[in-house]
Length: 225
Image 1 (cartoon, rainbow, N blue to C red):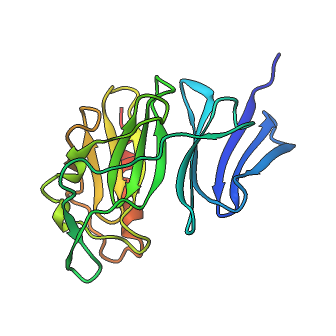
Image 2: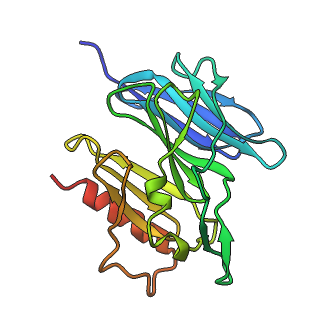
C-alpha cells in the first residue's frame, strides 16, 4: 500500500522552503531556501493542482514580486506584479487618527481558488482584495471591500493595515471571508464583489493583539457547516 506524503510550504525572512516527508513524518526533506535573502510572506498551493504554487516575496530595496511554480517548487518564475486600486483610492485613518489615502505597498497573502489553478485571491497592504484568473499575469482590484462605507474609519494594526487572511468556503461557492488588521473580518457571498463586516459582538478590550481575535472569528465561522 502506498504511504501518504506530507508537504509543508514555509515562508520566512530568509526565503521559502518546501518540506516533505512520508506519512510517518520521521524523516524530512528540505528544499530551499528559494529566493534566498528575500522575505516571503506566504507560500500557497492550488487545491486544484498541487504542483501549482504561489509565493509573495518582498525586500525593502527591490519591492515585491509574486512568484509561481508549476512543478511543485522545483523551478519558479515571476508573474504579473501590477496591483492598482480601481478608481478613487479613498482614505483610511492613520495611527494618529488623521485621514491618509489608500496606497498599495505589498501583497501579504495569496489564496488559490479551490477549483481552478489559474484563479488566485490576494490580500494587500493597504487593505484590499485582488484576484487573478490567468495564473497571475493580471490582477483585478475587487473594490467592493475597499469601498465599504466603514473603510474611511479603518486604521492599521501594529504591523500595518494588512489583509492577512482569506478563507474560501467549499460548501458555498463564491463565499469568501477575509480579515484585516485592525479593521476586522468581512464576508462576501458573491466572490468579493460586495462585502459585509461581521464584527458585531466582538471587542478588543483586554486583548493584546486585536487582529488575531478577528482572525479567530473568521476561522470559527468558516468551520460552521
